[in-house]
Length: 152
Length: 265
Ligand SMILES: Cc1cc2nc3c(=O)[nH]c(=O)nc-3n(C[C@H](O)[C@H](O)[C@H](O)COP(=O)(O)OP(=O)(O)OC[C@H]3O[C@@H](n4cnc5c(N)ncnc54)[C@H](O)[C@@H]3O)c2cc1C
Image (cartoon, rainbow over all chains, first blue to last red):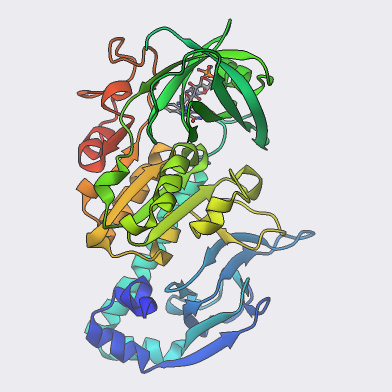
């Protein structure tokens, strides 16, 4: 399954991957479901197996602005790993989604009890954050906009 | 090749708010055939000439997608059907798709960078038996800026599209084009990749593909520098040891990467 070959799980060594998957249960969300809300308790996370999830930010007086979408193989949610364990974005399913769902607390506990496992998982989450930060910075350049800004 | 040959504008289509595609037919003798990835110097009489990639090659007919950024591109964007423009070419290196036979193809386009990749995708679709899987990944600024929407080859190639910014009506992907690489279907050691877009996008995409295990020698990128003569004489398009109008615009990543890392070049 490609969700295991690459994406978040693909970056984990097989032993750590199998251990993480012992915490997983299968989850399905119909299209349009809101998976979590900005500022809500980040007590779970997901690995997307199929479908598309939009991360959004609430803007008063407007429809939530989509800042990024996540798909097959992607980690949905990392706020569960760092205090104060609150979502800093909202998440809505663009299309029906299947995912592995994890409760955050037992995974955090396992990470604390087994430093090798904890380091591997933390490293993978950090890599996801670093990649998203890099992509966001590149998008900030407005690469495809008019050269030098403004309009022709 | 150094004197502009007259071509008549036989079709004009507005693609996006700042981009149009013009189709040209030789008024008299045609230029030698163009290959995907090559470019022409197109002259708007009385204004000047600029390099434009071919986005379609149909016998002696040429098509160019032009984005308005200044005087010459603006004049060619607004040119009317029936008018004559001057064309020199073909110039530069092509994508050399034939070297990718038997491989998975990953084609990554950012913005107007899709124009030179369009004939490459059409060529791959015309001879599917020669290649394994075809992945076409497209990044754009907003949904309104996406090129060639609804053209049949987009469905045939199963293109994946992402935009930097989207309004509420958009139900597709939002994010940098590199995010699509994770979801593409290819076997890195057996992949040939073709990239065109703004330089930071090319660098990020090539780095991701190499990270995934694609051989840098199998990645070809199309680079842009100001071009003038088109024949490797004037030196305007120099990038280190390369004169991009002659040694490019399509260059192997192994050759391009160290040059792009030098700020002064
Ligand atoms: C090999 C090659 C193939 C190309 N193919 C296409 C194509 O198919 N379609 C297309 O629309 N454009 C293409 N371009 C870019 C196009 O040639 C330039 O946009 C054009 O030369 C600008 O000339 P101008 O007189 O309209 O604008 P200018 O007055 O020269 O410039 C106006 C503004 O645009 C900026 N600019 C100029 N050239 C570029 C450039 N190459 N990239 C980004 N910003 C630039 C300038 O810095 C300035 O801010 C290609 C360039 C090369 C080198």
